[in-house]
Length: 497
Image 1: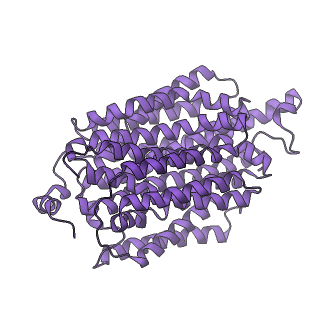
Image 2: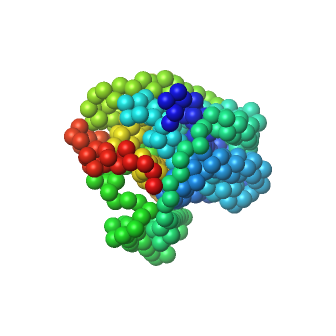
């Protein structure tokens, strides 16, 4: 980095694209009912619109980080942005649920190429003393986009239809491309080997596990489903074994996990991502199908949550450099878990929506206390030559949380709906497909009550998952990590190979 050149404009440029792709993870949640109706899809297919994106996003992240090191973060970022923007246009023009799911896969691949480069820019251009502030902006952007997605989605669905949650990415993508070409520097590249065996094993293992969990309830957890899940777990275990024994340059350098805080950060961020995604799947079905709110109205309920996360996250990021790493995220996890347990308790047909909004605002504060400090803690000790690999591993575990959170909550919700004697089609319809609002009062009340019960019960799962992140963050240490040893520090000052 040049002494005269500030790294902040480059970060602002990649943040523009990063905001868009994180927004796309959550913007679909509020549009699920409209997509189901327009494309004649059931709950499982609607969940796959999100899961397909997350799965295609998650699997390539490990190698995408290495591609950035090898060909330059700027070049790989721009390639991913082109793919993402083109796939967004395809998503909006889809005429069937299968075509939409396929287009979402392409969109996820573009996002996978982009994301590790944003963290690599921070690691390779910001001095250690400023990384907390930079990660505050990065984490705040991720948190704000995750919460703002449903709000923007609600407005677009009500105004123009579900297609526009994808079309809106096209002009934003063009602007983000111009900004990146203009402001992002061409950082030095490094020669890297590519662990093809590791790439194949990680991709196959992740796909089998997520696909098995997602489709489990629809297939009544038959033998095929169980074999898929078990096989996926075995393949992932084999992947870990090959990484441990790799004598060259593995896809996942296990030396990263010698840094206790990096290892614990990956556990904590997986928990956080799974819980956030699980919450939104449940909450937006509840607000629209139980409380009969429009997409815009239901998204507005969470507006304070998005606002507080976006405003507080950069501030929290700056503070995180000056306090022990466990303090802020542990507080955030405890507060967020409390709000999720509260959400589960108040998801009744007649609870106060004002109370729902207040609890959401508290959850927004909790989100600000988690995302940025976790990312800053994870990368704080990474030497520059491992920036791509470390960013890829952290982001992969984060996306695994989003992906598995979506798949598991979808399977659980489908099972609980079936247990209430409700159909597997669009939530909030009677067995003959009649919308709840069109039913006679006594039947309407019965369907609403059963739907509310299923949604409330499923909301406890993300609350429990958050407790894993709480424990992990409480174990962060202030002791020097493996990446801060004299050998590692000398590696930092060594010229790139």
